Image (cartoon, rainbow, N blue to C red):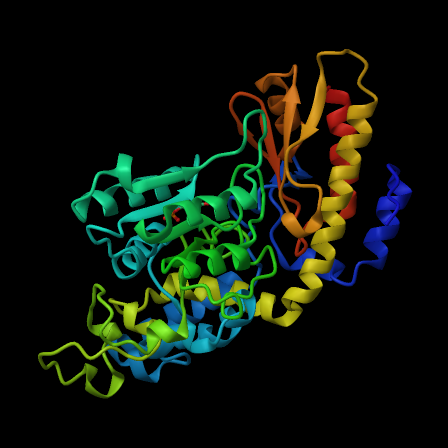
Length: 425
Ligand SMILES: *Cc1c(COP(=O)(O)O)cnc(C)c1O
């Protein structure tokens, strides 16, 4: 598409947008009586207007039924999480039995590592990306330590090459080959939270399997944002949160993917609780853990229904639209944002000032997020954007992360952002 930096052009794209009515299904934050330009759906997605009714339904059923609500409420709570298997499997490219909604992201990452990082004296290394999200770093460090290994020896970080911002996929593959049979597991953020770079998960998984290692991904920034085919790619495990692109509310319930082949392996070590027990025997309260042959086996506790109700409201919208349409619009939106930033950067005349997009320009290697280094600018720039109603994210020393999302952002949002940015610069 040939973009133009004009209001007329943006209005026209909005007019043609098949998903334009969806914006009205969300609460857009208003500051000083003006709708904000909300570019932080990668951090906390906006609230669907339907969420309140979904939660109210469960509150009313709780009031009406008390404990009987586990079986008699409109959406019986004992099986509430089962409603997510189909729609979530469509979002991540899985079979329904391979996914379960439970806990929170870092909790799940730890549970998955218990099963899929099983170091031995010979095979003990784990590969991750350099500067992984801190929570993931801490989880890996302590998993390695609690298995009796030294993080300095066991954790192999793959970094960008000298002077570069992105991590070369070939370097990840090379690190896997080099680690060879000392490699137990690969665990990488499928979409880098800082640069927005999407890794080649299929190739990384295949390389890990070639040396006999497990391979998993943290998809906090991938789920609901990019095309995922976890089953087809033969990924062993994955986890994600629901409050970023999935719009399910602060601290909302998270989800995991566990490859079918592992679901069928009842011998696989794991932490366990009664909600992972075969359903026929769960309430017999007898000795002996007998895992369900699905991702549900990793679920330990009964479902947090109120948080799941918010999740259900959001996922029903995703299921109504479908990932294909979201991806189509997402590519146009991030492309337009890239164009506007380039256009404005080209008009800057001082040699030490420029805007550098560090997110890959190839749409296959990015999702909604565009990360920009504001060379020659400090946090003042970000503060001015915020004052003018742009909600984005600032990372020291000078990176702005923005993620226009297809469900509720418009092309006008991006055009108006451009005008505000121009003024601020
Ligand atoms: C957002 C994010 C987290 C947050 O973890 P919680 O357990 O949900 O608090 C962890 N890892 C990555 C990569 C993230 O992007």
